[in-house]
Image (cartoon, rainbow, N blue to C red):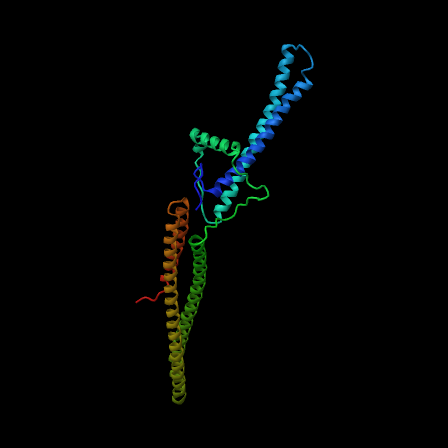
Length: 302
């Protein structure tokens, strides 16, 4: 089990903080040397006479002020950009786990916390008993590897999302087949009506034998139509059963997503990640509700 460090972080995160502080101390030392060199250059290049007028002293100080101002401004800008890059690494790592990190800018001016960091730096870099971190080990930011439940839950959620997409595709195919079957049924009914109408218009102008033959033809067409209609009805029932099965599968996936959400809530209930993951699952449930509304349009009316 990892111990709690002075800053309230685990050992791994404390080492990351130490690496950054070491980097910042190095940059700070270089800039201080640069400022010292500005004064040293001034001494060697301008302070060669024993007496100076007020204007000469003012000119020397103004020149020194401009150089020091430029150096300090450059360092402050570089520090700000460096912090942005560090935040970018952390946010990119969090986004891989669908997390939304939040910062409290007001805490950056908390004097008590700043003094705590100062004491931590003093203890860390002045203690002779503190072990140095091996320089050859290059720290890398990677997605959190907690192992066990969290990783399995994440994989399960991805699998359920993929299965959900497959079910959506399957439902679209079944809906398309059902629509085609209904269209074919309507076409056959219209064809029969047209044939009956044509038969009614012509029966007064044909002979009895021709009328008998036409009636036989109509009967055969009716029988064939009825057979086709029965086949279409069975096909429609089969499609409706497939549609019902798909809906049950969709409900099962929704239940599994709900169970995965509850497990994830137990894992992250004390972190900001809990709220973010819940938002994602809520959106997914809304999508499923919308899909159910769309499916209701195709359910046969009683």
